[in-house]
Image (cartoon, rainbow, N blue to C red; front, side):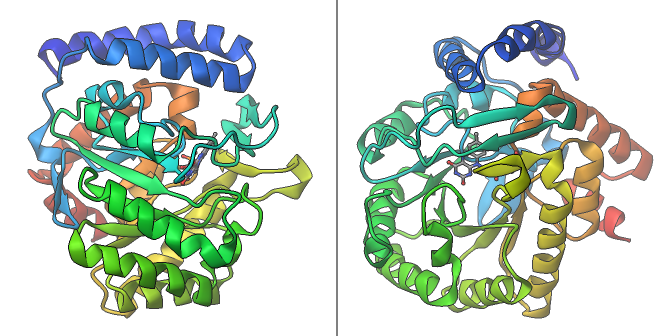
Length: 357
Ligand SMILES: Cc1cc2nc3c(=O)[nH]c(=O)nc-3n(C[C@H](O)[C@H](O)[C@H](O)COP(=O)(O)O)c2cc1C
């Protein structure tokens, strides 16, 4: 690692513990707001970083600058795009955005488990609504990186009317987004996960399909780690039938003993990993070209290696970024660099082939 990147590595690595001390002394949601605000302010002044061409990867017809992206929910309103794309994320997903602005659930609704590097949230799709998020998306400096948008229905929209929310959002965001995600897997909107069942999902895919014919962008669906295997198989079937481009696995998990909401981070690792491995097999067995973006309890290079060995390619992180800061991205790059040298691989595809053997 060289040039400006080297100085930024040091800056982030050494300043994050200090920043984290302050942020973790605040209530979790206030810390989050403070962080997003700081990122929004700083983002526009920060330079582009030179990326490492060996880690480039083509998927869903898009060129990713590396395989590790930011998961949805951290920058729900697309306010920090310029900051996130300055960091060595290979791609950034904003949202969940709903058609109309909504407040989300009552506070407190975000909780930390620091010793377990895990979070629990029952936010409930709080966001500024599609008009403002679309403006932010257009204004953000993407620095040539992939920016996806995660779509959700409003709480006041009934499940019967949900297809309209998703098709309207697709129509509005598709021209400006690199990819879109149908999110029906959050545990924090009452009844939302019912839409993961075959009939609900089919109606949404059907409604969005009409808009996809007018503006075609890669489309994925995000699933829950709490789904039964038959339900996951049925999602793969629908993804193939409607020619979606991929599945994001997984969202947070319900752990009743911890309280309401969805748990993320290390407490989610095993469940999310099992879901991903099952889906990877189903995708392969159905001779599908669908991509599987892995997320959920990926806290460092070893978790990524597990995912790559199982046949995955693109991954996302959220909780690890909260607990470890941007340093986690530099650590991953350093490990990748070492592995490339050890294996004598020159491209990410070559590396994946050598990992799978
Ligand atoms: C506070 C919080 C808010 C989240 N909001 C969203 C969201 O709006 N949409 C979504 O698809 N996922 C959301 N997620 C889920 C993450 O995108 C991710 O799937 C989950 O946290 C598992 O990844 P991790 O273990 O790396 O954190 C949220 C997660 C957290 C912790």
